[in-house]
Image (cartoon, rainbow, N blue to C red; front, side, top):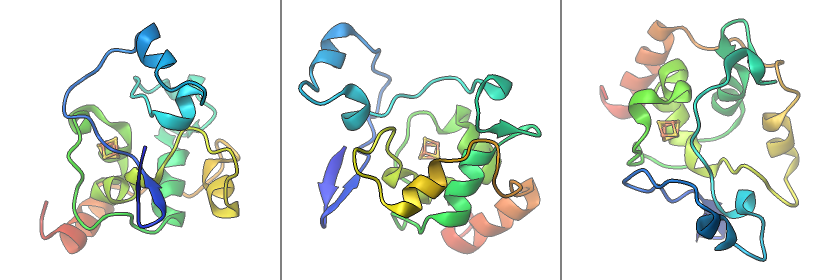
Length: 139
Ligand code: SF4
């Protein structure tokens, strides 16, 4: 996490960094999940946010959060990211403000984080593409 204009944002690594004990201990005394965000394969039906073949967390992020950045953040996992595959660039423009664990979350973040499988229908690929064209000049 980094801070800018009083807000916390994700800082993206430009290469894959394996999770090691040293990395996990480096955030002490804070828990790693308050400082780092880990990429992991989508667990699909084993995840509380997955419903009807889609990630409702990604749909809530796009539906409820304002954009956090004006252009796509450099991200090493975009080609395999479910949020991006499902919601397009709209997910990436909101992604930097998403933290794994927040000690004192605002009401909006609580709404975005839960209640699991509830949430808006994900956008269709056509809707995501159209929104991407409008917000990113055709990216
Ligand atoms: S939503 Fe976009 S920026 Fe966030 S992890 Fe996925 S590809 Fe990267």
